[in-house]
Length: 222
Image (cartoon, rainbow, N blue to C red):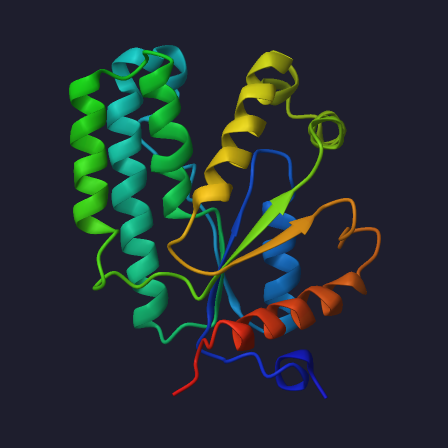
């Protein structure tokens, strides 16, 4: 019996994987999609017309970048539900406003006017009963030391050259954000306990936990 039938995972479900940089979102997305025979939804970084400009001048381009992300993630989330579900999504639309836009505002790389315009647009587009929210947000968490080890191991020069103080702030922001997140049910997984690379069998335990939470929150019941 395959896992989707064994644990009664609805074929129309949409799950979003969230967490800070280096926590293993893409790996988890691929592993869950393969185990459940779901499609994947990844961020299209290469087509982003603002990313290079943004890294050259945060203050000049942060608002443009966040508006672009909001529009692209909005379209992607609608598309997943229009397809009839069966998707695992890497990174959520909620992180953009709860983490990144807010960070730019507080770090003064986005003006108050731009931040208020962005958050107003986000609320009007996303935080309504008409917008299709995921059936479950899978939040990957871990100690800062564990995450820094993973960042160093994957060897991306831009990430390795980023000051540790930035990762400390980002880690704290994510922990604060998830504690107040309520747009959909949340399953929190510590990466110390669930390593789908070195222990592929752990994916079944994750799916079992997903199934239990969906039933506890009465998802897909009539």
